[in-house]
Image (cartoon, rainbow, N blue to C red; front, side, top):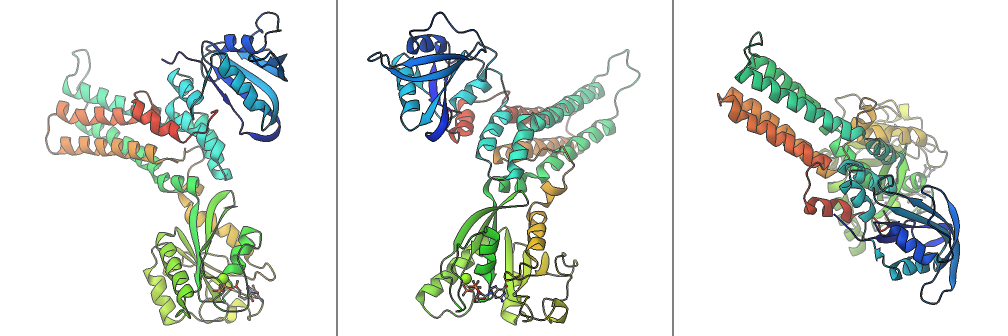
Amino acid sequence: MDVDTIVAQAAPPGLGGLAVIRLSGPGALGVLRAVTPGAEGPPEARRVVFRSIVDPADGSVIDRALVTYFTAPASYTGEDVVEISCHGGWITPRLVVDACVRCGAREAEAGEFTRRAHLRGKMDLVQAEAVADLIEARSGALRSAAVHQLERGLSERVSGLRDRLLRVEALLAHHVDFPEEDDAPVPMEKVLEEADELAERMAAMLRTAPEGELLREGALTVFAGRPNVGKSSLFNALVGEERAIVTEEAGTTRDALEAAVQIGGFPFRLVDTAGMRTPAGRVEELGIEFARRYLERADLILYCVEAGVALDDDEVQFLETCEAPVVLVATKVDRAGRPEDESAVGSGQPGRSAEKSSPFAGRLSLSVETGEGLAELRDMLPALVYSAVVTAEPGTPVVTRRRHALALESAAAEVAGFRKGIEDGLPAEVAATHLRSAEMALEELLGVVTTDDVLDVVFREFCIGK
Ligand SMILES: Nc1nc2c(ncn2[C@@H]2O[C@H](COP(=O)(O)OP(=O)(O)OP(=O)(O)O)[C@@H](O)[C@H]2O)c(=O)[nH]1
Ligand SMILES: [Mg+2]
């Protein structure tokens, strides 16, 4: 276990009324006393006291601050912790940290406080990851998934899976070798039934995984269509500011332009691209090439076409090759007749998903000029990308990390392996090794058993002071 005392600024450096400097480790109180030499006696635990923080190098006062002392194990890290709330800004917090270092503390590495909290049993690994997600969340959806995870929502589900696994093992044991006093052995069908239910629970959790990972990055949403149809105008409208240049000339956009936005609480990365046509020059050609590359990676495509104008054969052909779901957007509806009059794009109900036979995940008409249809588009987008998250039963934890998905996948594969083993006539004791491997995968996920490598990967992405 760590025995040294670490210190870091818990809020990012910069202008702000307050800064919090956190110390953790057995020497926390000693460091505090060294930087507050005038104070009488140690502060009472969990009571805020007012102290002058002194530079041990020359005895000068750095700042006057509020200090709280938390005794182990009732603290964030489970160690002795001191929190110093001093004035914010560029210099003062840094001087306080330096003073603590001079008095024997070591500057903390990224994520070290939370890592210690995990190692001292204050939170499991999944909760520790939630701390990072909560801090980094740029959308309401990731924030609420993180809070749920911090409150042990995911941990409890995973522990529940582990309990069920143990139950399958216990049933199996009774099947193989039932004690005299029991009425009869457990039939194998009963064991397999339980295993199947367990597998289904794992599958249900895994269903949110692809979308859960998107919550952390944002869904790549690419605007495409012929030049001049109004892609950049729509991009600007959704971003909420004039980011892309808009002109009446075809071929205005040359580069791909990206912006991160939140729509209905969900994160999207919008990408405006060059309009597709036979390029007029090298720059435009490159722009179109860029657009193609984005389209290949897209999670969602907004294909724009002017209201009243039919899609031509090239466009239909192009849309057939798109792997991502496509929303057909009829633009500039203020100029055209009503959507009912349109030949190509007006056949669906605006703002509603098209019927199943349609190649489009959705279609609607809008005008950036009048704002018509924009709210419908915003309403439509989250469900198109995040349907598993949106429709998941309330309380179902969202699997937001690759690490979780991999562990669940491997556990599910082991349960399937167990079933297959039994079907293939393997002795039950041999097939049962799959169940133990599944258990291991779940324990690794929770951090019941972890190697330093796993911890390094998890905590590497934390910021200093967490
Ligand atoms: N009346 C009306 N005009 C619009 C609307 N949306 C865009 N326009 C106009 O259509 C022209 C082209 O708009 P852009 O947003 O630059 O179109 P684009 O698809 O990005 O064009 P390129 O970048 O050249 O491919 C501009 O003159 C816009 O003002 C709309 O909803 N109504
Ligand atoms: Mg443009």
